[in-house]
Length: 125
Image (cartoon, rainbow, N blue to C red; front, side, top):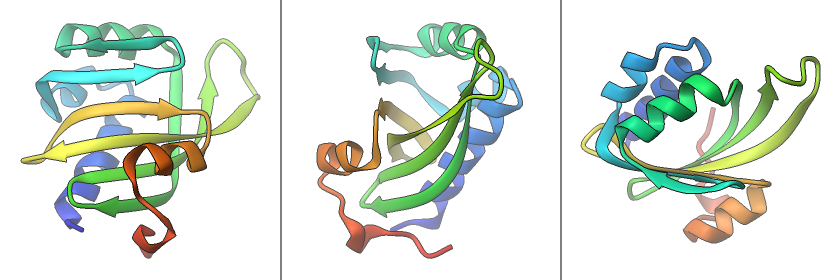
């Protein structure tokens, strides 16, 4: 596990949650892959579009990391549904301090299964 990978993912969350799209783009590779329940897309323009229209905040909870992969359990809130939250999990692939891919899953178990991470990869807080 690399602390720089975790720092990159936490900075990515901070940028998203504060609507700092320029920093979010700087923390992401040019050909970033973005996926979730509504499908997948690729590239910085797609990330910019998503970040400016999704109206989502993702508050990190438990984190799991191994060999460039970071899975974060998150509390998600959407601007379109104030006061309502749900628990989701997102799998990040980080390389050279840039997010290469980000895929949101409905729950932690699914995200861990998709990345072959396990409880053994839990990051101590």
